[in-house]
Amino acid sequence: MKKMSPWKISLVPVLMFGFGFALVPLYDVFCEVTGLNGKNFEVFTGDKTTLENSGNHQTAVLQFLADADSRDNWHFKPEKKSMELQAGKLMTTYYEVTNPYDYPVTIQAVPSVAPGEWAEYLVKIECFCFTQQVVPAHSKVKLPLQVTLSAKAPKEVNHLSLSYRLYQSESLGGTF
Image (cartoon, rainbow, N blue to C red; front, side, top):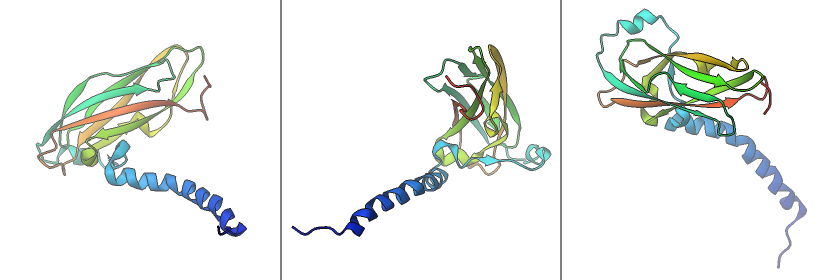
């Protein structure tokens, strides 16, 4: 049996570390390409009147879903179960989160759009997922969401699901 040299054996942990280090950017690229976790949604940064005057009458039903982290006891739900989006027409709705604890918590919402290949046609103008949110102790907070359907949406885009998963931010909020 042939013995492996020490430098070859020491190369294994270095390669493992390099692979682990590369996983985060590779995951971001994978999500962007596939639409997983809504990573390829469009964020509108222009003039809102441009959207409203798009002339495209394409519509799609947008279903709202909410999921709090299973280890937490707060209540998280959309104001509406669904709404009809029209290309270029701004729609506003809210999600509601209730903090039952005796201390404030800082949360971060992570969006996911399904089907993933259509995520790019959901345009978020204002979203509570853009920044962390502080929810005071024993409070109910309405979190705004303003969306529209992209004027670039093809006819087959007729339904979308927008799901949010809430996580407590360990950096700013209290710990459980």
